[in-house]
Length: 300
Figure (cartoon, rainbow, N blue to C red):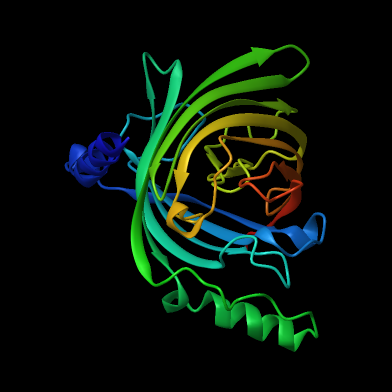
């Protein structure tokens, strides 16, 4: 797995030079906000995250995969992982990350591949605990358990994913995928997503790290509604967020089950809401959690 991280880092480092003769333009932005207050309201564990993706490519995305290294995604992400209030069931982690990813078709565009690397800042240095405490105080919410934090540190997280799209009857599409991650967390994952409806099928879909929800990196002018049902299972080796040296024991498997709806009533307005069940991640977590995901997009 460590060799995979090095390989991905090298590939991403040279990706901008693979098409050096071609100028790039912005082809879309993607974003997704996750919070368990939009789900089960438990305010713990994978309690909140936000991702913003900016995509550039030599030409606009029309639903046809471009060459690997041509579409570049600049990804900025924040996350808060927290213990259950009043307990020490897991350490608090404030996370900020930035990374570079590429998406393209291989094997005559029959397989969509994404690969990339992110650099993570972790700990009090991120200011995420201060932000959460100020937010809870402003809205008279219970104080979060931020005292037992992971120390300041930096980490690298690399990932590679391969997707195969299957066209089904009745405007339905299935995307099966396998994924490997290494660095801050080492795991291998496999799963599928069923998309009912045409909305979004000609867009470049990105996968959220925490929930696995698909969010649109590009957006065409088509209007309508589509529904998404998905799930995956991962084999987990270790996690920086649950240090073994502190006595935490990582669950050997994780599963996620998700559903969502995309609605675009006009070309300039789109909405997404999804809910994801996350299975327990460590020994001592006696139940899973439900996280809600939200995106509202206006174009002016």
